Image (cartoon, rainbow, N blue to C red; front, side):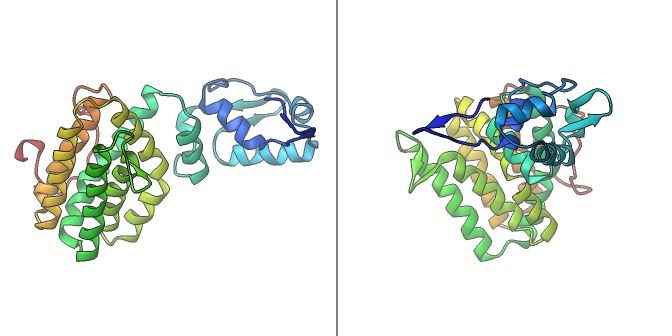
Length: 260
């Protein structure tokens, strides 16, 4: 992680980015000590106060803990502040395929997205429906191209936009903002599931059914269809079925996957 030289000048790297990359890529695992402050100063050519400021930012993000007399260690995954936009961006940018990451994000989506689809089917406006439909069209059109891109956006971009549009269609400020904060983590799962998917046509049909249920204001069906989309995602990630122990925010009396 030494600074690189370009055209005779030394480029000063972003220390926080470099350390985050090392943590999320697994070079520094939970429990590992990172280099000492003086070593980081020498590596990056910066002052000790700069290093301390960077380390404090990573501590505040839950990635590191400073232990008197020992140094600075990487914290356990459960301590990372996953709703911190910095953390989710780093995870999307640097994390290697990690079954635990995938399961945690997948568990979040299974818990909330069927409920969000239920709410969207009761509250979506014409503008919301247009946004959902445009994202869906982008997904379909992008699959018709060799590079899976259409009008400058990839299939994965449209897939994430589809889910974000459903969150927005709830007209609940918390759900809408949560989708923005978690966009990078949802992107990670979308990219990894679509990259491994061998039945994208099936996935598109499941997405279409969610869209149609919301358009027809059928909340129970929207809920069940959203769960079906996630079942497909689970298959593409190598998770045979939605684990029974994953929680759900499903409304009382809501639809079950068997009602699709």
